[in-house]
Length: 281
Image (cartoon, rainbow, N blue to C red):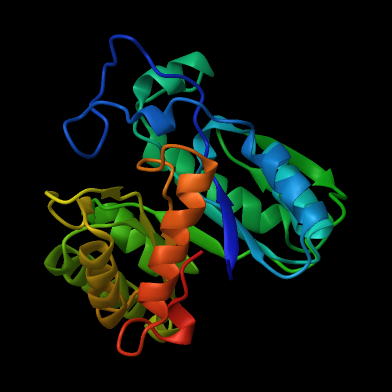
């Protein structure tokens, strides 16, 4: 099939009466997002079963985990895979899930920033020391370090989230948004990177597409294979480097999923669609 990477998401539950709308479609949680295995365990198995494809999280809800535990899980996968991990991190969208793990919904952005600070400290030189009102790491050896420090692909769409990506992310993990919105948000990220003295050209853009294949849809969320592929081609022209094509929202089974994947692969491999750097995962 030619997959370039394999990705796992991070969900805990689907509330019957959610406090927050799902960010997409009609606000209800898609059926495909109601069953999730542990992403760290899934990627550990994938690491042992593969040797070339990259492995990624799309996305880990970073605030749910104490930083040393999160760092250990990511480092373990990175070692098992020989340095093939891309660490996609986000804030999540469900206050119900935050309540279930005992983490305050209020102040999550500050907790997220502190988590990123702690990861950098833990993956730095020993002895590791970290002081914050949320966590304290006394001078310690925390080993092993990653085989290759995992690139941090940060998710987000709000202005402050986009500026954070520019300041400190290795890339942007985005959804299939209308092209004008993609361009505007990418511009904000690049400007933030430049203001922080960073090279915006070094940042990656990874787009996750969860299309529903139908004859009467509206891209980018739904449409025919040709229409969705056309959107992905325009996204590549807008600066997207890699596409995560998640077909579980539309496939009726494993066989159907592979058939759809083959159709997309044939369409996207055709001249004039995607460059080699924008291969679907």
